[in-house]
Length: 371
Image (cartoon, rainbow, N blue to C red; front, side, top):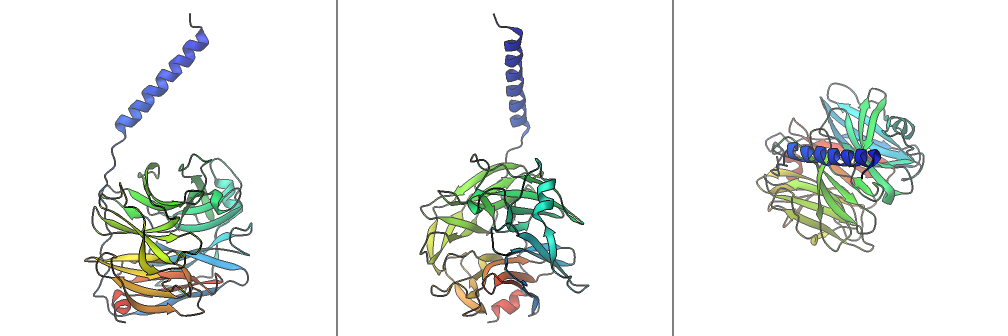
């Protein structure tokens, strides 16, 4: 006969199964219809302005994020003696239309972030950070608690006036929840939820689309399959079912940008393939302009990975035409980030000077296309 302890354990197991079944039944199925952002205003008058030209006093300032704020933008980046070192924090500057930009200052520090983590933990270094579009004053940060980038995790960080007020790691990997990183902006779905482009960097490297619910809980993850070491996917929705992802080839000696497509809202992705776009293993930034047009900021020179250009595709990424050269030979410009503003303008930020600083421009589509 079963003893009281065994009966208690059996009862708890039955209760656990019952609660799991109840949770699954009440968990609404995902809506896989994309919600493409409004097309960029093509009629806005031609305009261009450099809004930030920052050089770190020493060390590196790299991988900027463009964070939409009321009345303007915040440019955020990681800065320290060298990337992946124990003195790297996230810096930021607010650029608002009604006031002069503030001086760059620390937005997220390793020490403060470690204290507000649930559960509390050490933060050795910080990396790529993007805006969390599901909440105000929130970001997704690449966080390392042990090792290097291959041991990183993605943290959902909530911000207050003096910095982080809470943080938790997204549950993405069975490998001690390590080796997932972020780089590109989120994309929305028709049900109001968001998805996070991410990538796995340990062993079998791949790009992924992570579906989140309104509370930021991970609901699903879909890989972008293929034989290449594809990372840092930049996803551009074309309509409610189709999107194109541009990926960096992380393999040594690579010289072409990679691409994958979905025709079912991100539930499945085509095998990652090489494009005919020269690219010496660098991420890109891209925006849909409407009617099948995509504007891209890309390092597209097979001999000089620091040359940064604006290019245009008018057939959903199948062919491309160069528009403007933003940084020429010797510019050492990398890691572009581009976002459309509510007023119809576009902000593009990137690292320059061999990761020594951050440069940002604000312009209209008319300027970009006027050549």
